[in-house]
Amino acid sequence: MNDALLSAWNTIPPAHPKHYGAYFLTLVRNFALKRYAAGHAEKRGGGQMPLALAELSEVLSSGENVEREIDRRDMLEAVKLFLGSLPERQRNLFVRRYWHASPISEIAADFEMTEINVKVTLSRIRSRLQKHLRKEGLL
Image 1 (tube, rainbow, N blue to C red):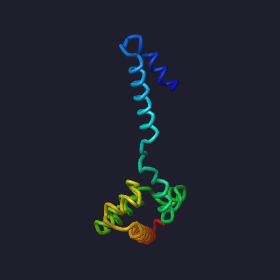
Image 2: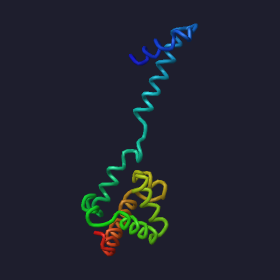
Image 3: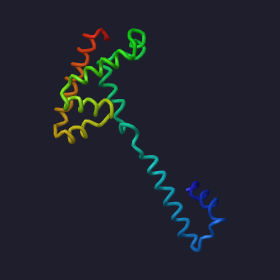
Image 4: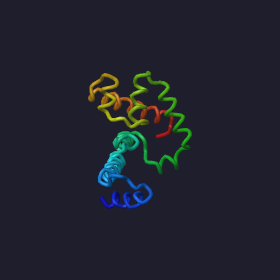
């Protein structure tokens, strides 16, 4: 309310509206809509990023250990190679979850799968990724 009053104070002198009540209500409504939009803006991944990273933490070692043991480019190249070896549907599932941080429910709806099926498929892909990284000597 205070911000709306300040906005009215700052804009009324040059504007001189005919109906101050309607003008003020419009300012308050617009300010409220802007605050609502800012408060409900969807951050990247819609809050799914911590959950997605927690799922991947089982596969990858901590950032400090990875930096000491291997070069970052080797890890990226190995993951790209692994993703290239996956069937397209599995690759798309993996990318949607761990790159775009899409919720499981959204992925299930888009791929016409059950949520359980998506979770199991992602779990198997993570397991295969872990085996691949071990085989490459990166874990």
